[in-house]
Length: 198
Image 1 (cartoon, rainbow, N blue to C red):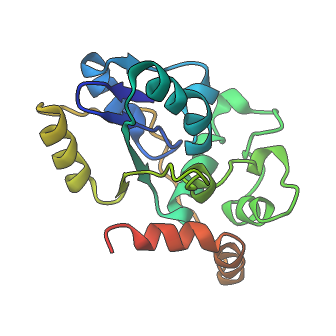
Image 2 (cartoon, rainbow, N blue to C red):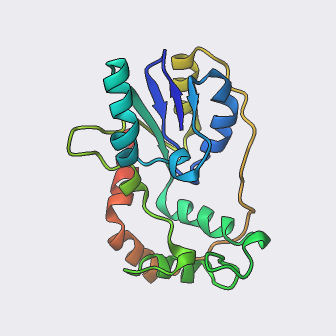
Image 3 (cartoon, rainbow, N blue to C red):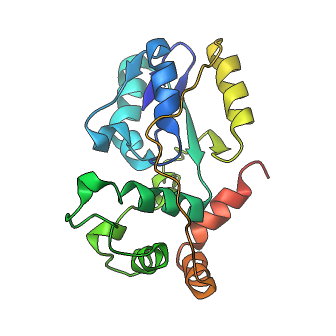
């Protein structure tokens, strides 16, 4: 999570949406850069609302705008799947080395998903709060140009991005029944992604 105090902006770090590259490029410009622990680096909107927003509101008497990036849900799960196939995780409960992508998504759709398929939900991460706190600026991962233009204009900078934290490429096959189940169980994620820029 990056806070740009003078520019009145907080960049929320949704996991597996390419934010690490932006964090590396923009951290020197930020008033505050939360890199650890992961629970704070990747603070969802509800955690930002509970802990960070009140601090800015009470101490600084201001409410900052928020920005986030969302990835197409199947692509997002594919990134998690590939990330959890790293040799470093071999033999651990959250490793996906011995399951297919289809099995991973089937497990993700279970009510009580096994450790390797517990990755949360982007819609839940970005869900507006009852007090009206919501993501002010939401961009699609698949369309980087508007995000880049917004940041360069808002922060008055030229972005030089290197790819970071990239999962290895591999074929990701998903059965049509599995996809239909995913779209049904996580309809909010698909609806939110389709609504961006609409």
